[in-house]
Image 1 (cartoon, one colour):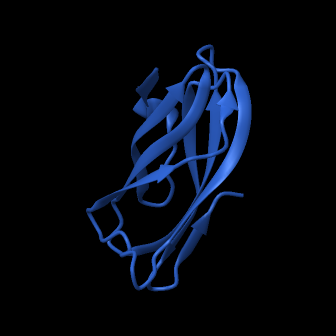
Image 2 (cartoon, rainbow, N blue to C red):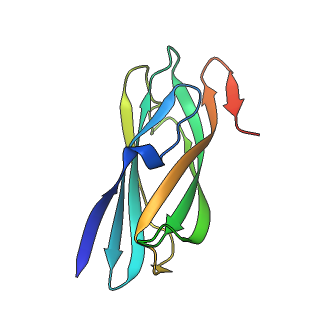
Length: 119
């Protein structure tokens, strides 16, 4: 049995004009097997690189494991234009007991060369 669940928006943290719109976790037989995250660019500049941290938690909010996600635009993958959103699907190794993913954007880079990051 496989299920998708959406995480509450208030649990997600954006940075420098890139907001986390939605996070969905996919679970099967007590394991988190994947997640999707949708970012919205509210900046006036095009975003070509993102780094985020993801915390995998159980139903009680206890941390099970942490990981990092990365987006780099290329000739084949377009950047995130101002006002637009982009969804990414990630499949970490199966994480036993985790049922949700909490996202925090940690680095944003624009095509103009501006970089913003957490400390």
